[in-house]
Image 1: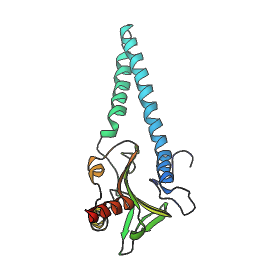
Image 2: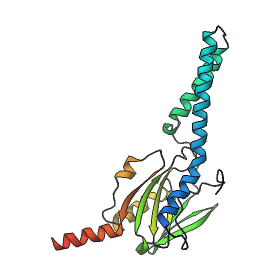
Image 3: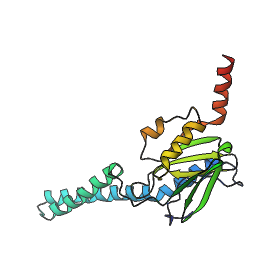
Image 4: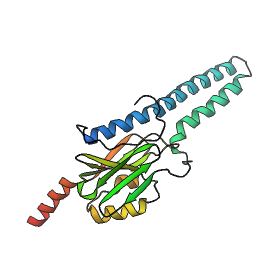
Length: 204
């Protein structure tokens, strides 16, 4: 995947031929986020340099330095606080489909992803630095041979959270409530961990 993707792909689930589904998904969204991160860093550095240059011009008696320092100082502030700005997006193009057997996500410019409920082994909460223009909070349902990822802004997210509550006891909601604006992922549920907990509880 080279450069900025044409569509917001998100943290993909792996294909059956992928040696490690979790690693593939994580590295994939890191590549997607790289361009946005580099551009933000570039804006920060350039704005800081021109702001300093404007201040030097003012100190040298050049009145145009007020315009230079003022303009690029504003750009610097925008670059610093941009991750906390309100998200301005159109309607979400991702469509979440829930059935008795599986969960699937469709997008006009992305391959359909799906996974059977019984095949889910882990659920990740993933955040990226793509906001505010692209979805930056995702849920990734991972299985041994693939999975399904979707942004938390999909219209059916409430129904999905109901399914999670019923089907995946012990799901950790703290990362979802906390949110995030950086590239990160948190493990919210793991089948093996819940089976171990259930065994210990039964023995107790």
